Length: 299
Image: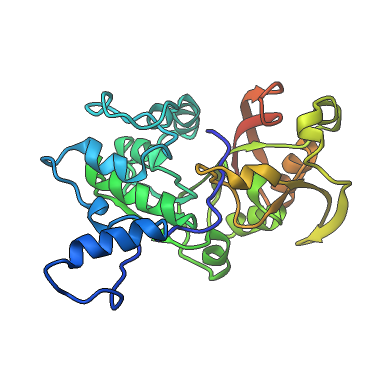
């Protein structure tokens, strides 16, 4: 999964100039001239004038999509990453024995690519929690487009959701989210309280690899020590910096996060009861820092 960079705030797409122009025969022309003078767009630009198509729905967020859409929508212009057929997710589901008739909690569904795979695999009920308001709306577009029927998308912070002691589930999906947390070990602890199985894809901190890359090294600060749930560990601060200015930013909700080392990631999982861990698709040369895929289960 690509780096998740979240927009700083959802933009108001258009602004109406109600009250500024009297409703006369020349109001439309006057309003358009006024809007142009102050750099605003006409509300009419929010309308679609062609027959309904999948492309119309996707183009609500034109230029912001990461994912290539599944059949029969391959010709729809969206993103380029094959998250709707993600080999990492297929490996995990096979290794876990499938999810047929099971309940799933998905943290940060982004564009519902993994949600789609889970429904295709027969999951009974999926709760997907997304804090990025634009990503949440994109998930709703996909839900309508591909016909997801067993998923409920919730708009909000999944850490706060987990802190509220939600119902237990058979599996938790935490793909592309752990390295966007300011307190990643707390997230692992919270996951351990609602699920005995978890799928994780994440970047991790490796001093030698990151310090050898000036672009990456410049975004990290010296580590700090923290204790969470009885587990002592180091956190490596990562600042988003210029990434916050990207229109497709879909990372964490703050301007910085904390990364764990590979060893402390695995140790924290074991500390909170995930005694069986399988690792696959480790990528030391990932452009955004070393990454791995894992599934962790209780004994």
